[in-house]
Length: 133
Image (tube, rainbow, N blue to C red; front, top):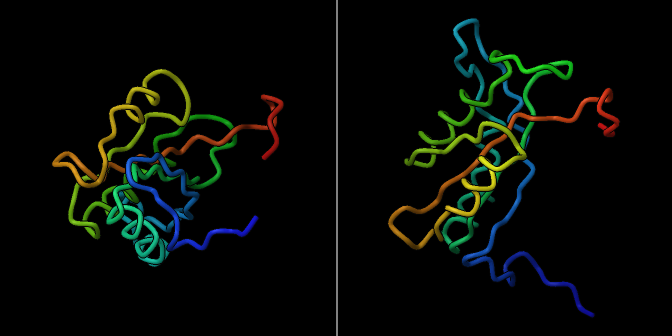
């Protein structure tokens, strides 16, 4: 079976999970000081959005050592991404669970008015939970 190229994919109305590297430097106030990694992801995100995909972005940020810490939130990256895309970016509270499922299933196709919702999650499994990292 022949493999499809990226341009041949029909993503309209489909949920597409994209691993991005938004582990960007921030200052003491939590502002992104170098948005290069975010800008480098724009071509893929825009391509998916323009073709009606329901884009879900996944990244890690910092090294929280298995514990929640607000200083490792992806909120600054989501804000920068929103400015670059010219639209708000939704930030999921976690990467799993009923609240995240509700956000994902409520996403609209990029061709609708409430379009182009992007969800970021800062969760990463810890070795203590038995998950591999």
